[in-house]
Image (cartoon, rainbow, N blue to C red; front, side, top):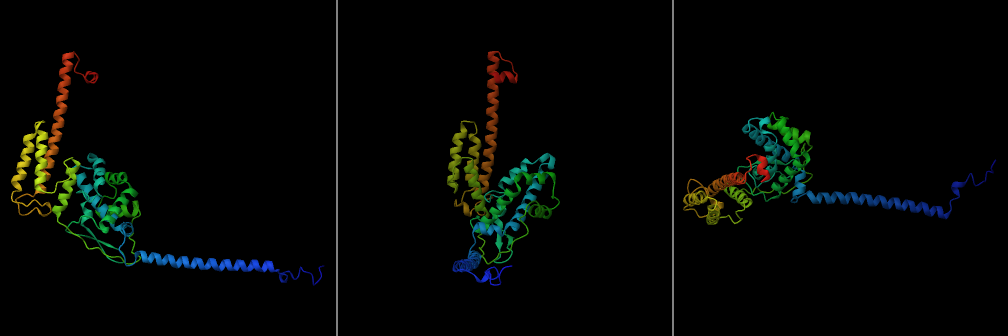
Length: 338
C-alpha cells in the first residue's frame, strides 16, 4: 500500500513550471484562433454586402439571379419557333432534328432574327425576385441586363445541350403547351428554377429602346459582311456602289442584267431619301432601303445557286464530250476514271 503522503495521491498538485507554461500557451493559441475566425466571418459578410447592395451588378452576378426567368423566356421562345418549324415541315418525323438544331444555333444571338427576343426584354426590380417585361421596342443589347440574359441563354444550352433540346422537340416531350415545355426544361431537365431573390439592392437600368429599322439595318450589314460584300454598308450610296461592283463581277457569268435590275430598283425606290439607314422606312416610298437591300441579298443568293448549278452542268457536258471523243463509255465509273 502506498504511503498517504506518496506523490501518487498528490500528482495534480505537483505541476512543474514547464507544464504550466505549456498550458498557458495552449489557452493563448485557442483565444487567438477564436478571435481570427470571428473577424473572418464579420469581414466576409461585410464584403459580400458591399459587393451587391446599392451598386450596379456585373453581367455574371446579375445572370445568377436571372437564371429561372431567363430560362423560362428562352424555352418559351424555343417552343414557338420549334412548333413553327415542325408545322411548316409537315410534322416531326418529316422535319427531323436538323432544322431544330439550326434554330438553336441562333436563339441566343441578339444580332439574328431568331435571337432578337433578347433585345425586347427589360429586367425590372431593384430587390427581391426580378421580373422580365416584354417591350414593344428593340434595344441594341449593349447594357448589362441584355448581356446577362444572353449569358443565361448560353448557360441553358450548355447545361441541357442542343442535342437534348432538339430530341425533346422531335419526340414531342413536354410539347403540349409553352408553359409545360418551359417549366419542364427549366425545373426538371435542368435546375435553373425556382427563382433566386437578390440578397441586396441593385441599380435598375433604363430600357434603351431604338428603332426597329436600325436593328434590321445592323442585321443586314452582318449578313452582307458574311457574304463578302464588305462592312461599310451604312447608306444608299455605299449600297449602290457595292451592287455596281457586283454587277461587273457577275456580268462575266451572264448575270449582269439581274444585278443591274436590283441596283436600278433600289435607285428608284429610294429616290428622295437622305440615305441615313437609322432613320429610313416611312417617307421615301413604299419600301425602305433595308427592305430593298434585303430583297437584293435574297436575289443574289438565288443567282449564286443557279450559277453553281450551271457550272456543274457545264462540267458534266465537258466530261461527256471528252469521254465520247476518247472512246470512254457514259457510266459513272468512266467519268471517275477520266
